Image (cartoon, rainbow, N blue to C red):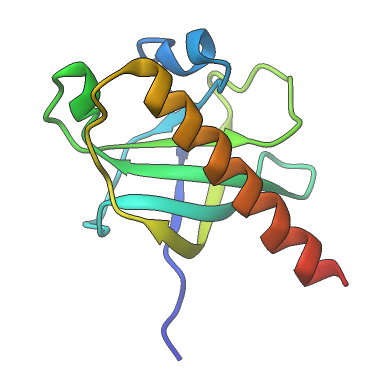
Length: 125
């Protein structure tokens, strides 16, 4: 059985684009090569595992080419800057892609969150 990737690191300040889109993300530097895409994940900020969605890749929709890790923790509103997180990638749900508009990106992000909620609901049943 293949072991899940776990990303551990301190949350860095990003461009705050995720927050502007309604999906504030925790940015953590990658220390290993991980296949680009969107992953159902779980994140621990020191008080237990929480459902999350993680993006590994370049924000091509915004003309960026550097690979990064951004994690949106569902139903979580605390400030994570400077905290050390552990993010376990549980399941890849799609590849990384460039969108022709921010609206289409937001629609897809909402779909990713819906799939993540379903995954954790099924896991708890």
